[in-house]
Length: 184
Image (cartoon, rainbow, N blue to C red; front, side):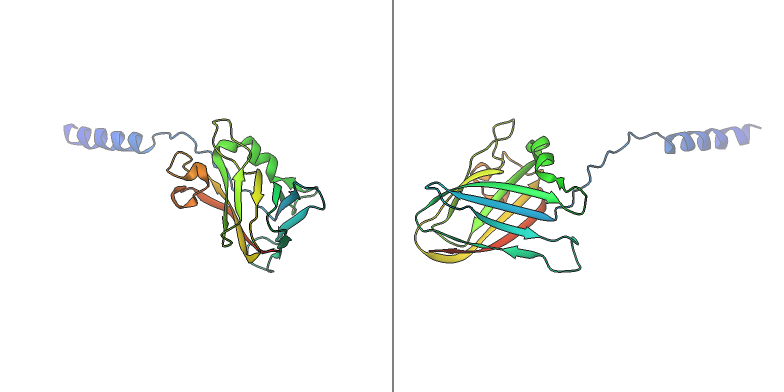
């Protein structure tokens, strides 16, 4: 009987330690972003320019439709971003979800045009940049591209991130779109 007691005790300990109940992991699933619109309204008035990306079938399948724009030289534009999931009916506003989780998101703007700059006009609840609202400024005539990147859970306290430097931001890219731009 003594020979059975020790193995049974060890087996019982192993079984109960292996069956330890873990806390559930709540997964915040990445939302599908099918549409991104960057609306640029000239400070001097006039018609808005809308840079748009639309990919209704998501990754794979058909190529997205990307519409760039022609901007005036030496002009300031007020920019607003809108993101949607148009596979839902009615379309789901991803912009609203980004606002609700603003501390976990940041937009980054990168341009191959040296005289084109984008500055943040909005901040999250912690005072860090968000990017749904911005000011875009052009300089002299040029052609190139403007890339908009939405990062999920970037390190907003990393060096340069508050100024829009994506290099040290970390996090995961939710969407990245490159728009062709002409400044005339």
